[in-house]
Length: 348
Ligand code: SF4
Image 1: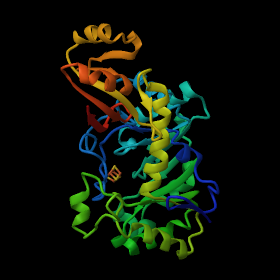
Image 2: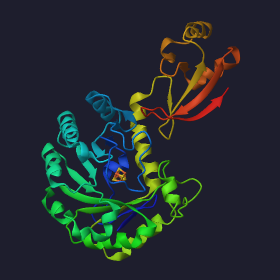
Image 3: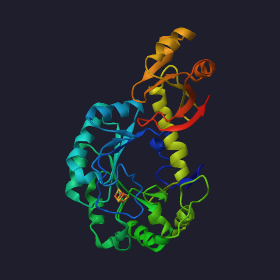
Image 4: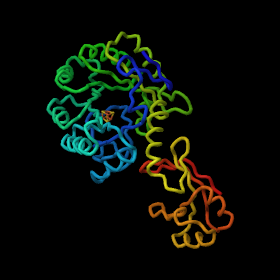
């Protein structure tokens, strides 16, 4: 067993850890927010949950070209197809698998999450070129998984097959039953995720008395301890535990850094965290020429942002000019993601 930094561990299968995870090099393609499983801990955000929307990372997808664009911007080496449940829109999922393989080649590794144990649907995605499937059986089946067709489905899938569940402390006995049973099914791996609070599941999780692990984490107290306890249950199938901090600190940060390299404008500075810093001036479009002429700023170093309705320039330039113009000026830090989430705004 190899213990990695940031409280993640791998047994057997990934001695060095999953290369895609560590590099943050897989695109997350949510093919629909629809799902019939209704997990009480479902972390999906309001804009996705039970909505038939498509997102590639943080980009709302309107066309197939958008998917290719996002994959290129993060230099994706693979894709994780998620939902909702991708098998609820199986024809769309098949289309996207083919699209990705046609554009990025056979080696673009694609895995898919589903809670459906439907062999017909699985056959379609496998034939389209899927490389790996990760099952998330409904928590209501965990204490009677042997009564389902899970074992048969696993046997007949014909590609790498794993199971992925969150580690939920009050379902300790159900998890033990599930893991002991599926250990006989021939899975290639089992992924255990630290249970996390999200805006949409906080009420449901609080009802069970859960609290956050500490002030700076969204992880649920007790989940990690149970994950480490599972190591002593004698499970033969390779186990992988992924902590919330590993996902944030390694996966997200690396993906963001990759995207930053491709989207940063000449006047934006890429920080060590992969976020972008720039200066903004809250003034009308017409003011840009006056500012440019007055301070002798090169065309490339100052631009109008139509979407945000503001003038943008470098943090250094805005610091220089702020005392001499009658407009509000800020240095801001934002994610290089499609939604350009702002992290910090410093008034000048
Ligand atoms: S299977 Fe996934 S998407 Fe569906 S309800 Fe459960 S956690 Fe949410």
